[in-house]
Length: 108
Length: 114
Image (tube, rainbow over all chains, first blue to last red):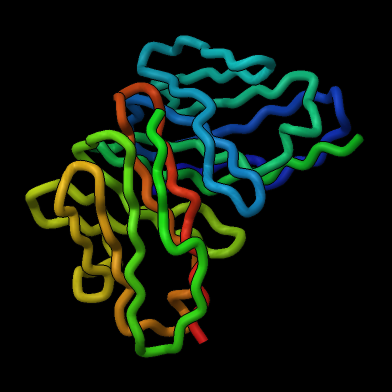
């Protein structure tokens, strides 16, 4: 029951926006978002709890629709530092299951 | 957030041998998690380690192949036993210090089996 992310890959120019989607076949109680740079461990970005509240982190924000069992990550005015692989994570019974991942590349 | 020291950072091992990976956390945590990440893939949960009880393994992972120890609230080890080239991967430990503040990961162990 691994969450499915789309798209699998995104290529952007600096300043462009992107949306990454995460969809689960199981009911969601919370959604995590992480970014992993090549050769490094994943780094926590934000968590969204049941209730649909949109969270923000600099120019990165996310939404959570528990009815649709989906979450979306919004990257605004992308910077070179945004490059990496983004994973959503769903917290099933006190353990984190990662989504399939979305590779984001930002070019000057 | 927690700081996790994971050792070794990388190793090249002969098939048939075993490797033990250690994770030390700078604060006490109830559960520690072990993940595997194959090249270009997502992270797959191997098992959850609770102090004082047997680890809980995910489907496809068994204790004989991946024995785990959790002697106290700040330390855990994962052993990869009787290794084959298919075990070549990155192994990461992780903790959630406080609910709602995300998971913190060790720097990972890059294992190559030859």
